Length: 99
Image (cartoon, rainbow, N blue to C red; front, top):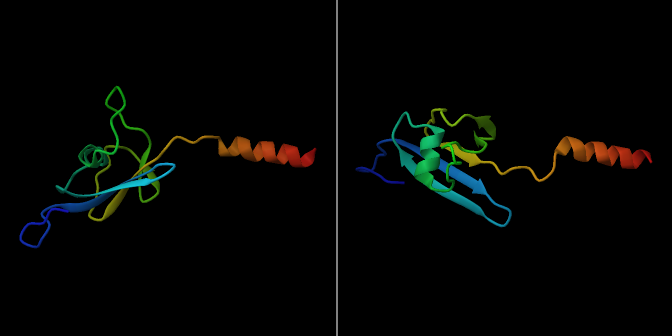
């Protein structure tokens, strides 16, 4: 993170993107009042979707909107789409166990 005379001028934010084979992590020093979308743009780990939107993101494991304001030491997480619906997987497993 960038430092100014030993003190940060903004807030420290971590952006995480867990991929199947590796994890990407960027530490940022952003201005106070920045949003999740600002952190995603500054981190460069995720490109916006065609209409300028982002996929699912969260802060410390809780889904949030891109307009959510960040606080010092927040961790922004970029979520991947699920491969399978967990509810359907459980239904299939229960049906298989009954038969």
